[in-house]
Length: 264
Image (cartoon, rainbow, N blue to C red):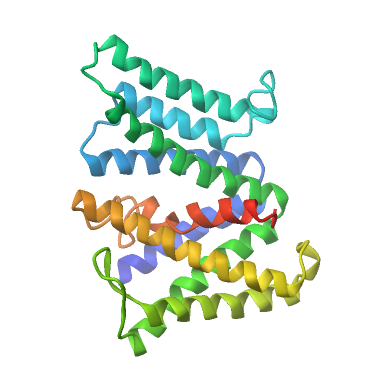
């Protein structure tokens, strides 16, 4: 427990100033986190990150995260990030030619999906911060309140398993408690900062329910990946908390959904 607290405090001391400053600081931090996330997935599968597909997968994720208009202004601003990502996909697929099909399209699917999954999640984190710090904090509060509410309610009254084959400890009651907790926190946040949002309170409550559900599903997806590879945590970079993906699994789903629904 002490180790968890110390890690959380150190992480917040480092992370909060970066979020507050925004801009390049957030973009670099998100790119680093994306690279670590790719590494964790490769590690879970038992693949070397210092391989052609590992390096290309990290590059693909980083290409998605870093805004092309700032980092590569000579590229098409609208499509630059995705075209660079697709360049890594083409090279990964090209390995099958060089290797004379010793490396197949099935194997190429893993690094491509890995960089897309991690890269798009952190790209939308960067986009949310570029919109405003308040939007970014709103997303964090929704995810954190969902996690806390689900844990507390599930521990007190949870009886019916939510998805026992994937995450045995999660319950339906806990999931509903997480949604309720997220709505309460979201309403308080919106009433304090109403000018931040383009949508009215009722719409934002509906969106919050969606974000809470999507966040919990993102957590289950990460649990399914870990169960498939037979590991407890995605990594060990955060003592007492696991890896980067253990901390950001919900957010990698929530940020893109927020963007899709026009919150930022």
